[in-house]
Image 1 (cartoon, helix red, strand yellow):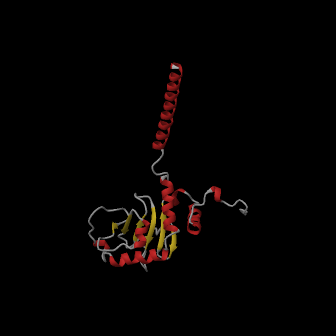
Image 2: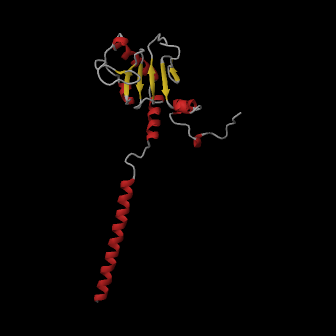
Length: 194
C-alpha cells in the first residue's frame, strides 16, 4: 500500500507543478500585454475622427470666434503669463472655453498673435487640429498658410500628415464622409479606376 500512496503523492505533486507552470505562463502573458491596447497611431486617428466627423463644424467656428471676441483686443501688445507655444498663447483665464472644444479634449486652445484661434489636438510642433479665423481675416504676410483643408469659410483643418502623404486628402475625405479611415481592405475593388 505504501507504493500506491507514494504514486498518489507524486501525481498530486506533478499536477500541482503543472498548474503552477500554467498559472505562471498566464500571469506573465497577462502582464506583458499592453495596458492600452490601442497604439498611439490609433488614438491619433480616433481624435481625428472626433474632430472631423463627430464635431459640428459650424458650432466650432462660432465658439472660436466668440473666444476671439472675448480675448485681448491688442494682440501685438498683449502680455501673457506662462508657457508660450509656437502657435500662440493659451486662452486667458477670464475667457470661457465652450463645451464643444472641451469635448474634443485638445492639448491646447491657443490665440495666435495674428488674430485666430488654434485648437491643437496633440502635443508638439507638428500635430493636427483646427484653426478658427475671425470674419474678414486678412493674411498677415504673403507666405501665410491658413491650414491644409478648409472645412468652412473661416475654419481650417491642419495636419502634419499632409506633408508626408500626397494622397492624404483622400483619407480626410473618408473621415469627413464616413467617420473612419479608408484602409486598403475597405476599398471597393468593383469600381473602375478609369
